[in-house]
Structures are given as structure tokens and as C-alpha cells.
Length: 44
Image 1 (cartoon, rainbow, N blue to C red):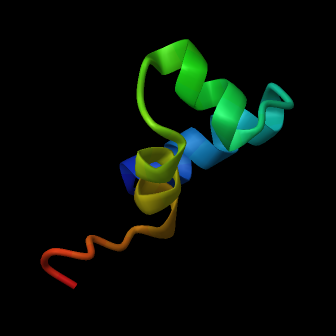
Image 2: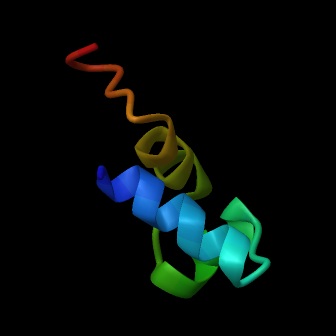
């Protein structure tokens, strides 16, 4: 299981949007989105 899958599962379970989760974790919403997609634009 990838970290993005764990994050998405946690968010859905706790009814959090990506933006809300990002603000709680001090990460950017775009970074959360990238993690959940299991896609790194730098390495493809």
C-alpha cells in the first residue's frame, strides 16, 4: 500500500477534503493531490 492510498483512506474515513487535510498537516493541497495520485511529475 502506498502512502497516498493511506492518506486518501484516512481523509475519506474522517470526512476531510484534500484542502482541510493539507491545512492540518502543514502541507500544500497540490502535494496531497500528487501523493494520492501516486504520480511524481519529476520522475513520471
